[in-house]
Image 1: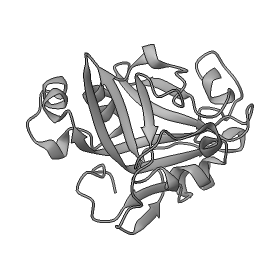
Image 2: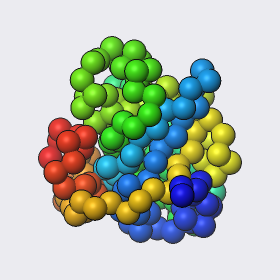
Image 3: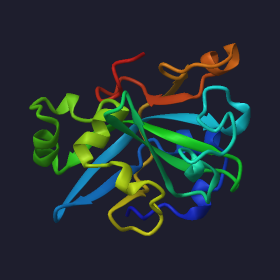
Image 4: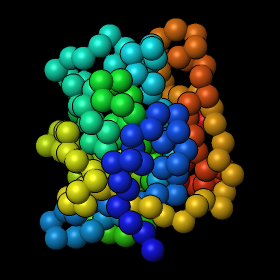
Length: 197
């Protein structure tokens, strides 16, 4: 039986939460329909000490949600047109978050196809911007409380049967440690993991 993840689940370090999100279910209520995907890939961002993190230079108007309470959504725009979804983790004021990088679509697939303009299920949510487009996640959900079980939330799911692998995060900048830290977590051989290996 799945249940909505609690504030306590998120109130741990990003490095603890990121692997534990694998196998959980991201749920979006949109236009009377329920869109659901199994989380198969995440990346941890470790606050102001992480040179690849948006929190590295401290709080700004853009990243203020990262420094707020755990269990809220931090959503940002990339390339001026695509959104990415992060969940805020850790202690308030730390600036930690986990990027949801890829989902395995489970429910509402036809709507996801329409929103993405794609027919191949494998290509609907196998990247952070793709999954936001497929599920209609945008700036309007910035700061949304994921623990309420309304509009957008995450539910527990069965523990993954696939091995969990780690590696460097995709396309990050910063110092050598930030570029090489194995803070990306994904399910081995899962076909819905993003193409970047």
